[in-house]
Image 1 (cartoon, rainbow, N blue to C red):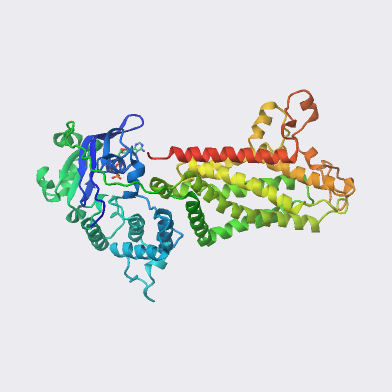
Image 2 (cartoon, rainbow, N blue to C red; image 1 turned 30 degrees about the vertical axis):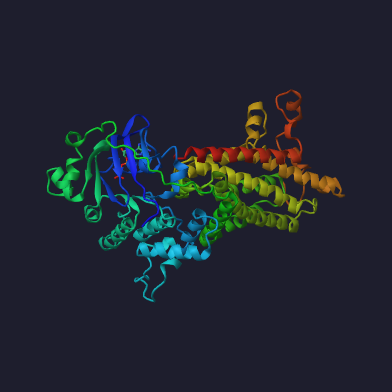
Length: 586
Ligand SMILES: Nc1ncnc2c1ncn2[C@@H]1O[C@H](COP(=O)(O)OP(=O)(O)OP(=O)(O)O)[C@@H](O)[C@H]1O
């Protein structure tokens, strides 16, 4: 028997989507404690919409939902941990093992003082309750425990059950499931629904969206919606055909797909047709520790990355391939190498992170509904992605440094990428900032395809406004360049080179950066001109600055360049926060 039995009352709720699109017509209904309810209706009639109104994922436009008499919206913090919810999409990471998935979920959701032994006991209990504790029959060598399998090795039905297992870890009093039986075969459906039936008898109310007539044998009640969000039936499964004067549930579906028929069975709720009973038995739980959450989020994310070995290998190959190409194409350390090094650092950051939030949006949203803190989420992503960017930057800089040192041309023997560690430090900073750009795109756009379309559009200004392809010669272009990492990355990195040479006791003429010579330049016949790296960037045209066309001196030293990178990072962080915050349900 559950300590807390929850009832839900929806009173006069309606849902309108933007452009006045009707999601739900006015309706009132009650879900009693310990009941197993099937939510049915033709495709697009509003089943998921109703589920989301009842559990707070996408609240009703008008009317009110009460949980044990407490307004869901006003008391969401109080009730959210008693609600389990598995949306249509999986809410688990494919790269983790089943055990790790459940272990991290427990660490993120259960109270801080829960011991490993208690967590293991809970994991075993939920796997048993969902009949997932049997050994895998399909494995001829036998018997790989499901806990050791990676989620991506599971069947659709097993994955769905692991998503439910995650929710059951916290022993919710009410569980909302959106089409859990869709990916299951008939035999699995039977054992799955039996396990849900037992859960309901144990005290967990279950509201399940389903399309499958055979699911009705297991439920206590059906809530049936007709097209355009009309509530047309709420009652026992055995009586539904009689109510609609048909022989089979299939005929109910076809009848309720026609608006004129639906109207015969729909009645708008009268005020107070279901009244909210005030029976609050919910105690406020302690707020979760952000540091602990950050630790477990970062730990989980690192594990996901390490388990995705092929992708990790590709990420590590990037600096080797790009660094190798730059070494092959450039015969000496020119401004082009400085520019491409800065752009590569930006590329690493953006490409590492661009898919990382959008790809797990269903998981993020569910965890956010439960207890996820936006800041800890962003920082956990940044920490792990920065680590990857650091390795990429070190490998890239090492390749460029060694290549141009070994192949330095006799006229400029001291000219190669330096200072080594400071360059790594600055480029790492640029890469972290670019990681935030990628994370912003990933948090803003709704699909991976959209993000990948926008990535090149984001990178082009970094390339165009760095002062290498063309001079910055109008105020507008200059101001636009202030908002690009391409500019600050290239300029800062160029200054690092110049400052290093200036501070060394080396004859200046032997350390200038060779300049492009339109008459042709040959490695062993150095007719090249040379100048400091900064002078070769079209950023600070003295003439234009004197005439007041360019601002010029605003960030005219290395520290100021680094500060500009920090400012851009903070702006990006804020934008990520805002776009994630906008996705909040309540
Ligand atoms: N975020 C949204 N913005 C605008 N319209 C939406 C949104 N979500 C759902 N709708 C619309 O509301 C209606 C009901 O959608 P809903 O997903 O609730 O139906 P459903 O019964 O669960 O469908 P299915 O059985 O196909 O999953 C549909 O017409 C859908 O296009």
